[in-house]
Image 1: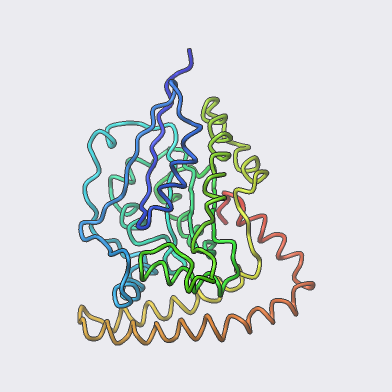
Image 2: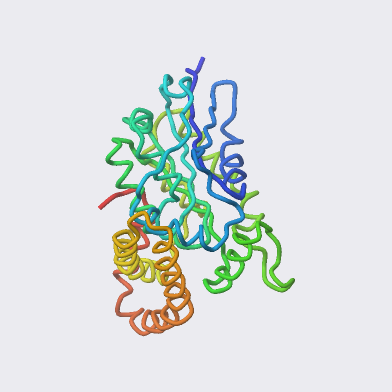
Length: 309
């Protein structure tokens, strides 16, 4: 008889989209030889959904700088169990893992759970996730975890369309067609429903305990799609976000009025960057695409993988 495999599924979701994704991925793994435990990260001071603009832009500096905030305790039964595999679902805020994700990973309990444990990351996002995953890889390395798989489900619509639709969802809490003409926001229901295919591949490797070829097999069924233009945008935006986050963090000094002022300025900058700077970056990307083709191929291979440079 096969030994019992223990899987821990961890995630944080505001809208419920990521919950549906991880549940679908896990569904094919369930069997009499597998024990699955679920843990939803909860903040001591929950973030609102839908958001208001002040709160949404107000979490920017702490999110980008990965400054943890208190979370509710992790059940002792989870902490006292050794797991064969952790499936870790997270969302992306400001080119970084969401603040609840960072807050959880910065706990001593996370260090205990992740040390010497195989991990598969699952992202549900708008479209930009590259730099967030790089930050998460660094954190997993610090926790002495072994990243063996990576899955990304993203909004397939073009960047500016998805900005409009996701804003409608975030600030109204309604996953509907904005003005009745825009597509529904977020990951398509078709992609969410099809995510069970990843669980079938994961289940095969869970049985054997051999994960060396897991990511290559996941990539064969479209687990990750890297868009080269967005890699360029993310890298440049990360440099600018770093300057903004440090500036705001230095200026606010626990002063609510200063926080509102500086995060409002950042809000206007972000709108300018999305609607004015990003199109220019796209034009430059197209001009230099062919001369950069070799580098682009290397980037796609690396960001699709579980490697860490």
